[in-house]
Length: 280
Image 1 (tube, rainbow, N blue to C red):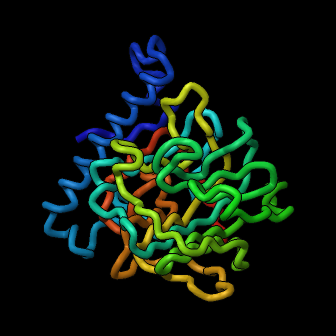
Image 2 (cartoon, rainbow, N blue to C red; image 1 turned 135 degrees about the vertical axis):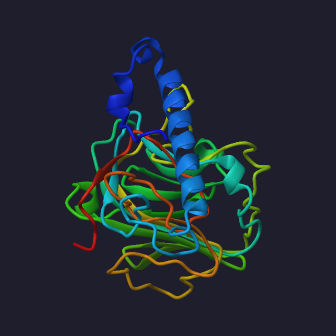
């Protein structure tokens, strides 16, 4: 069975230093994906794992015990397109939420997550000029970032929720904007073949929109969880629901981006586990 190696360890392997950054990232992604598949096979075939039973948290972490960090230059994680296409909501309801803590940004429009590229993304969030933007809605769905997020001293909770034809943006529990009369189709035909990337929009772009900072409790749910005029910011790790599609709780040091929903085999591209959480 393959062993877990960090991005920095991968860079020291023979011949890797001669590859381009793009090829290094691709090869590391393939290694991590093969490792994840081996672990998933072990989990499904182990009589003491699978089915929500007693697989160890060391082998399958995901209990909200930390966060992943991105350096803003080459680190991100991916839910592969082949898996994502099976659960995209189409014109239906959805909620996407997460906690983030700001780092030192290297680009002007860092993208926290994106399914698709730049302003034409199927769905995504950028933080630029003191605003959170939900794409492809742009200025129709945005909110100002708080000062303690801007200076990196506090976590920020962000949630996008669509119910019917209304899409809402909440930041730290406050409703910042609502886009009405629009239930555009969230499907693969808009950006065919794109992965769901967290920490960047398109790592293969000439100038990727990298995001730097800490992230945890990334949840995608195909239901409208928050439909009121405000929401209560969660004070403990997020949980699975009947309509959960992805739940990245911060994992553990041995596997930072494990999907606690057990639906996606996430591929980690260098992001590093950190013990800090918004609940500590």
